[in-house]
Length: 336
Image (tube, rainbow, N blue to C red; front, top):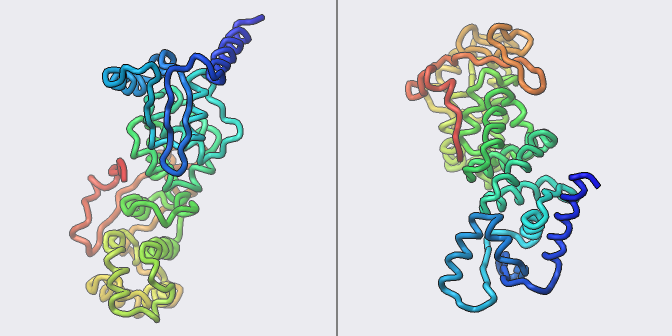
């Protein structure tokens, strides 16, 4: 019998202790009403496997002289704790029969219990094998990771995605729920491989999602409706490169929402587009986003999908309050 089989046997024997109704000396109440479950466990194992539980047990023992100790963990779902408890006993971080959302819940609960090795294992699994899911659920993963200081690998992955592949985030299923500062980081990026009209449409989509009472047809808007949308988008609009639009795009997509734009910007755009051919663009007003095939080799880096990346300074136009280039390009959000 090799060493690995011996360890597996030991792990199974300790799991058998967990499943045995005898000899337990602690009950753990997990969850909130009406979904609560009581688990039986053993203080000596919990004490040495989780520093968080050790602190709870230490405090509890000073207040309770009874043989059977009872503690509560209201912030963790019972089915998630059951998985973690089996890891505490058996040392095997099972990934079978769990969807990706459950893995996120396990990571958060393991972080609360100071099981950093389990946190790291699950983070690495998601990053190495579930990148498509992370990208499709970017807002959830981003906000969860930055709410927990121990989720450093996921934080780094999200930050790199914002910097190197911002266009992927627009395609996520939860795009409309991303924090405003993430949206701003995306639309001011030169690495965004998207026509400017699509940038505007996505900004508008995000703004409407924050104002569910608004119709998708601006012809039905009242002054109050326009003001609500304007207030929502006021921090984003300075970073949309309207001067990269064609005259036709401006007429069809921007004019219906002219009340959302600051008056000075709208007048400037109107003057710029008035005399243009419908398919023409204004020359040299806004710096274009650079197509991947035109990125200079010397400025490019290669990400995990072997796509060229470049960072460039962004020009400012009418917006005196916009941050200067030197401070903007390297400013990535640290949390929601």
